[in-house]
Image 1 (cartoon, rainbow, N blue to C red):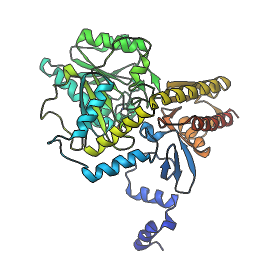
Image 2 (image 1 turned 45 degrees about the horizontal axis):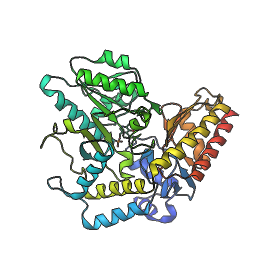
Image 3 (image 1 turned 30 degrees about the horizontal axis):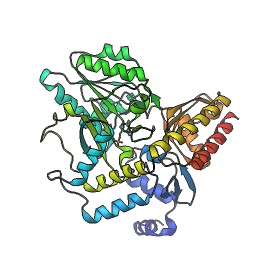
Image 4 (image 1 turned 90 degrees about the horizontal axis):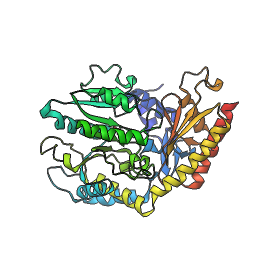
Length: 429
Ligand SMILES: *Cc1c(COP(=O)(O)O)cnc(C)c1O
């Protein structure tokens, strides 16, 4: 019989740390807000992770664009241990040198401005919403226009900003002051602006809805529109940013051949910034930097010495090893191979989109191989790739995303490609 005591002992006994017992514990004690895959991951090294049963996987998911240097990177471990011996946290009632240094690094990578630190992408966007509301407050403007199929986080304002019904359902009433128009449609944006509008927020590359890239014309048009109507242009770079595209932020890659002076007014960051250690941030252009004056915004854990030490180390490694170039080179050649695969199997793989190491593979949802299963085509492909030893991330209904570490090697990219080819052939029947 399973007495209370037995259950307790079995969870402590290493012999019983099986996949089923971990699942059982989750089933009893963890809020079931995630649809999880049937994998219990235990350790990692670089772009490989091992599950509790000893199975090895090539990690092309990267913790959903988070593990920018892969797993167990020795320099991150060193930064964590050394800084934790000195100072993990001080309140923002005081100065700490590392927060200032990290802010300067981010400013140097974007343009003159200031940086606010927090702990997540949703919180970074929340800061941009408050910045926008403060900007419009005195003339009664508050509305922020975002795009359909966007994703901006799971807080109440985040789901109000997100242009997808599924994240809003059941959490009404929504936070007021958000509306959505079609992505990459400048005329729709222009038509949606009212006397209440204060800002436009977009992801230059929409991540959650399947790697949809803004056109250069769209970005330039939005800038012009915002200048004409005195609106803030805000970019959510939480997923696509941090050198993943080969440039620090994805808009810089989209516009790289335009040779124009282009700047948004605010940019949110998180995911890859801390390589797995929680940190978020937003950058704001210098002329709006003083809107959030003392006492108007805060975060207890924002910009701790420990988080900033890790983020600074990651920037150092990216720079020293030129991982921006690695992401561009490995990613762009992987994408070319995947596009060739889509050409060979057009009935299976409808399109491959991306820049550098943010790649979306759009599968044909009506494939016979997908029929008769409740799970989305994207989830089914991700499951098949698990069997082939590769981790990827589903997006929307039928897109599978690759968001690996920026130091992915050519050999690892080829290994991933072979697994994807296998699954595509299998789906072709
Ligand atoms: C992941 C993500 C967020 C939310 O970030 P959290 O850290 O989960 O709060 C916001 N915007 C985009 C584009 C994201 O990909």
